[in-house]
Length: 150
Image 1 (cartoon, rainbow, N blue to C red):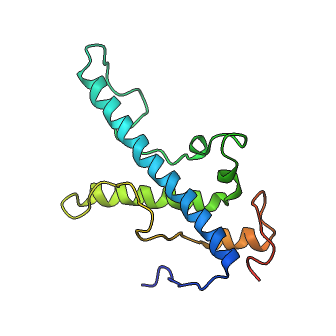
Image 2: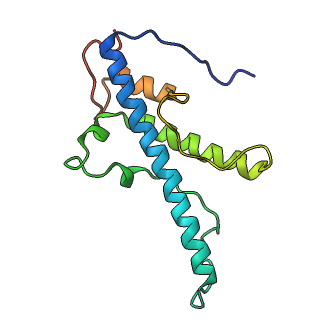
C-alpha cells in the first residue's frame, strides 16, 4: 500500500538555506519534545515515590502524550526565526515524535524510545498535502520567500 512518496530535491542556494532553517527548527522542536517527555517522566517517577501522591487525576491517562508545540516556540521577540517556519512542519514533527512513541509502546524490543536528533543525521522534513495547499493559497501567516516554489 502506497502511503507516501519520497523525493530528493536539488534546490537553488536560496532554497537550500530556507530548507536548512526549516530542518533546524523542526529538529529543535522534536528534541524539545523528547526533553519535555524525559522531564515529565522524571516528575511522574518522583511524584509516585512521594508520600503526598494521590494517584492520577480524574479523566487523565497515566502515560498520555501531549502534541502541543506552541510553548516550545517562545515569543516572537525571543525567537523570531521559529515564527518564520510554517506551523504544518512543526505539527508533522510532533506527529513523527508521537509515532515513535506508538512504535515503542507496540514493540519495545524492536523500537527504542524517541531520542534526540542530531544535525546531519537524516536531515529531512515531512511535507504533507495540507502544507502544499496552504502554500498554494499564499500561506496564512507563514513567511513565503519569492521564488521558493517557482
